[in-house]
Length: 328
Image (cartoon, rainbow, N blue to C red):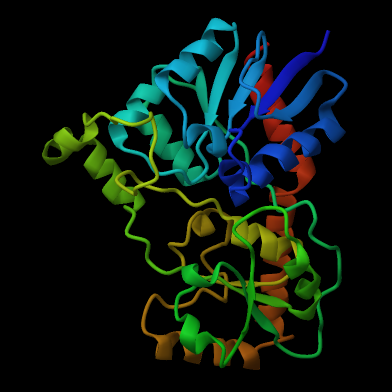
């Protein structure tokens, strides 16, 4: 008998097409069904009337979840696993969530470490964030350095000046439009410096979570729904820009503190950018242009090849299967 695994989102299309929910819900369920269907049945749905299933609560569901909706799911004899991805919420709401689910799914290593630190008795499973399954397969150009920023324009640091050295390939906030992907074969290098978003860093999160000066924040309840979008709780970004660059076999230009970069890129990775002024970043990119095709470039490509393997569909399916084995 196969175990039913349900990826649950919300009926509201705004939630349904969160980029992370589209990838982490619908696409992930399809990726797993193609590899693990001998023992498991995978479904993506917005119908919360589930019974006797392992239910993955996606970001789209959690963004508007209530205590009652979680109670109803538990009454249906479901195993509930919360997959926050980068959803921000008050710490008090996170504590309320932890009390009502059977475990967490982490999309980044930083997030897993933080959740395990705060909830040592609650299972937390790393399932690497998948790249968009619609990405084309191609060999990147080899004639000269061709840099692109791939993402939302408002998230790009130094956007107004970056156009001097790179192309801006904007991705839609919804998950249904894929025209931007046709441009990826034009490039062989991805720029990934995010604008500061005001969310707490990992170290600040740990201090804030346990420090006495923040006790009132940790216990503040939500009056509208269980979760909310304001960034009064740390937001952990998965390394999706790095995984996308790796899929394209394109070195990524980023800083050491970017999401999980430190876990996937070695200390001697040659193309870390300085966390400084635009002039410093610009000089670094110009230097990289001079190193294109050389020893450091070839090493960076080899690193990205390893990152591609560590974020491949086969790797993710194996992580998910390991997680499912804990609930059999």
